[in-house]
Length: 208
Image (cartoon, rainbow, N blue to C red; front, side):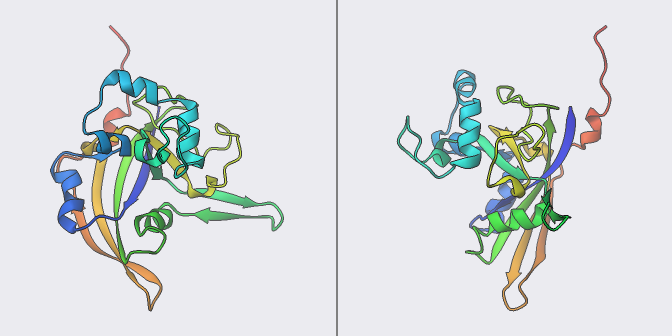
């Protein structure tokens, strides 16, 4: 397994609500769980499919052909970003797409809002696609693993499943936009006192 640092950008109503995702032990939940309020393990197994992951990545706001509601409302996945590198073969150069920039873009809802909250967290990655395994995230930004073309590959997405537990979230930061300077500045840092460092996973012990 690989430990991967990620960032989640959200626009929330207030500092109190943003801090509450940590303080109330809520963590980052998928839209499906937040919508229905309670889920069962058997339902999770039915949700975690390659088809659903493709819809989450490439058809997020489109109608689900089964439920006839936007797939975004019932998605069991959570989009995080870790940044990526885009290769421009024509110009013979690489462009770095930074995680924070992407998270701010989504957290402000594409520039609609003046501020966003960024959650720095870690997840476990499998070395290859394992969409049915709830406990690991999918590195959909990796073209070696996910070879099908996606117009959104440059977002550097790592896709978590169902939830990111609160003790895997290091902090919540508030970033505000100064439109005259066309720049963001950080105005709040809320650390998580229950954060578990990923180094706890660095060693694997075999069965006795």
